[in-house]
Image (cartoon, rainbow, N blue to C red; front, side):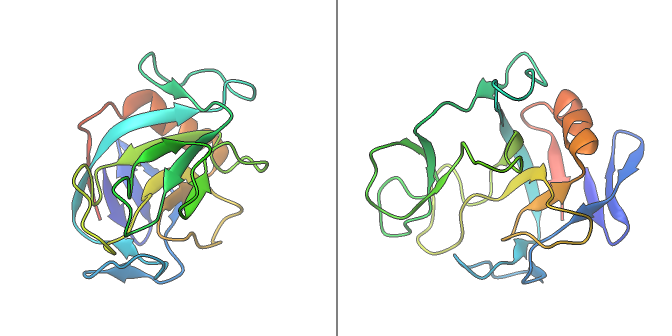
Length: 158
């Protein structure tokens, strides 16, 4: 996969996508809203089993209490954690459909550097052109199509 201003080129198709409200960054920081430039890789896939079927046999269901740590000073920074978890975090089982299908990336993972940013995912967008907090976001049918094809290790060039 490769990001361009016209969308992500993946598996012979161009998929419209949005990036972070902070644009692209060579020096990603937690909370800056930027999408980090560089070569990243798909590391996993999560999905909401109460809303969609598994997009791949290796995808993991998002269950109640699953969170993602964005607490840069915590030992579990930029990792999936389970509630209860007091440090800052993002809820993976959201009320909206943005995380119904999520491709995880290796940005600042598995050994997270404090403050370099967390939770750079590929997920559904709110609407075309609406920026993310640093992720890549796609139309619902496109994120499903992508998740059906992008196995762990698939490169993502931004």
